[in-house]
Image (tube, rainbow, N blue to C red; front, side):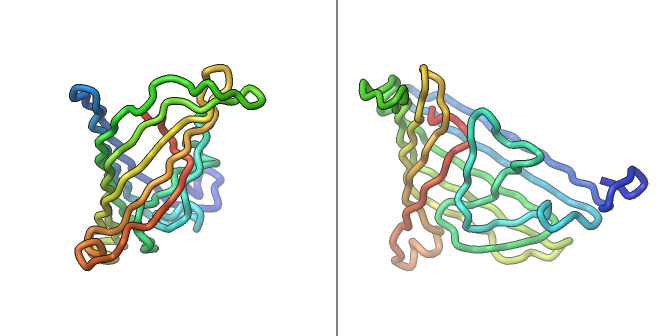
Length: 185
């Protein structure tokens, strides 16, 4: 956005997003790294932040300008805001059920059930100043899709996670739920 282009705001954003699925026998190792940098003065809703709101995505819509990605490290309760962000995830996914359950309620079924060991990590900076130490989380997750006519309408994830530092200090894993952006397997 730039004021010379009839915009109310004057800022730029650079984004790099990489992900990979690597199959090992019956498991998948999923990895992702995302880095974002903003320059100028974006509107409040476009600022970069980690927060505790649960992610809510629908496969038909995905991420769009009107429904941007929610940066939430599973198991972390830290809110951070800045103009540079890096986040990543590593998951070891295992299929539990690769078909739909035979239960059909009003044309909806449940299918593609998987489990995962998950780890998220990330940090945010304001200019070159870190807003805190690198956050790393660890946990487990169960995912399944609500389907209609074999098409996934939404993918639901339920899990337990916490920050690695908290786990080292004896804290228990906290439960979370989210509508996931990607299919479970």
